[in-house]
Image (cartoon, rainbow, N blue to C red; front, top):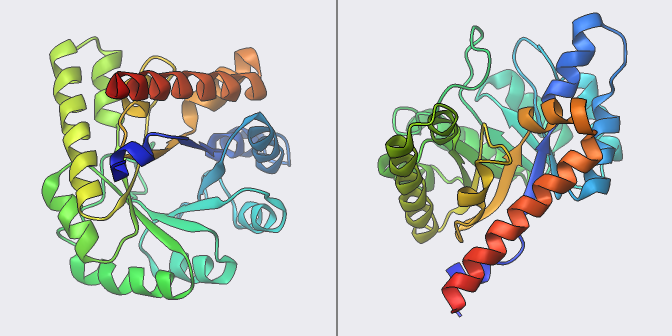
Length: 261
């Protein structure tokens, strides 16, 4: 059995709880509580929790991270910019994984992947500190061959492929662009796997767009947040996560069945 076939088994789901905190912060106070959302997510089948502590603390707070680390029964994926402040926080709490993302104060959400090629010198030393402390390090990047190779060179354990462009094209009904982006993502996943990197993916995924990404055999984890929190307004968080889990698993099983036929 090839390594790719081995990877075609259970696909992990990481649930990003940032926007539970966004709603809480709109009025202040403690409700809704991201920690409560994390517990519901785990009960509904999430394999891990993702939380992005931004420089401006627009959603997740330092106290949220401390509480998550103290009580979570699943791994915490700590999204962070490559700054001295975030390094200090990551080394203090030592979550399971640190995912380094690009961050601009004026952006509404993460826009595009990290420029690993242009930041090799900084990132190599930064990643070394995290790995020495026992953290697994992920880099959030576009499915670009040069960025993937640079990620391996700087010592990352994992890359998370940015699926936002694919999801945007799908939302706009641009079929040719959707196909082109899926080809890029498939090639990127294959290239990263060959380079010895664990492959994750995420950003903008919905019930309608997750299937082709879940079917990529090299991808072992998807991180999904904003859509799940938004859908939870209408159908509840537990059932929304369970439905996403079901859609992911069905796409994975269909791909595995096709390959074995």
